[in-house]
Length: 278
DNA sequence: CTTGGTTCCTGCGTGC
DNA sequence: TGCACGCAGGAACCAA
Image (cartoon, rainbow, N blue to C red; front, side, top):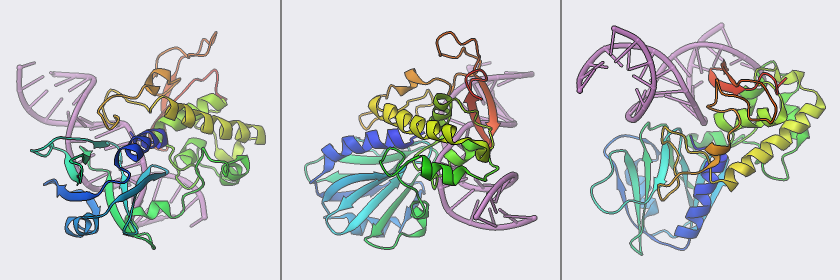
């Protein structure tokens, strides 16, 4: 599942690849996918536009166009940005951009939890409503223990559930929340409000570090094949995971006898080491 | 405001 | 080998 490091990896590739290129054609797949406005209007507003830059906000990918509009992509669970050749359209391909130099870019999403949104500079439509109350980027300077602490204090919900809240930690999903809590030595099912100030500080740093490591290793590609780079290759952070997907296996901390356990927290499968995390 | 449940969708793992 | 089944999971949405 693409989270902040995966989307950032894709963004860095795309920025080099499509900046300065003009969109000459737009094609859509047959299956319905959440798209605002409809395909016809999206196509109309994209045609002839040049990509000025590719940005990211949380898990959203944002193409800034020279006509003042922005093409916003959320990859959901299984969304991919790929480059495919000519016909026919891939089975799960929903939108394909064709650039003036012959290059193409495709939005592919088997489970169709992803979404496409074209916004005119200004008010955000309902489809990117999640962006409206999004907090600062967890890997930015503006993100600190004060910010996280404010959102955790007094809350009874499990700390992991709040890490998955994009208002609290935008870009964080199931994998990196588990990994951050492991690094901070905090059990995912702890009541958020029970965290002491040193724990909040540790979690703030752990979150930033694990996300940066994820980016450094080009994201996490699991066996389900959800996330891959634009060229179809795999990331490599899956080789460095400490707890996620490792239930029943030994904790990787040197000398630790713990066995990684899995449980449901807030309806999400959650992994932790009962020895390292309190 | 908070919290919990439901919905969308397909691929994959499991059991028989 | 093949089929039925159930589950994962981001986020919008609704209900209490």
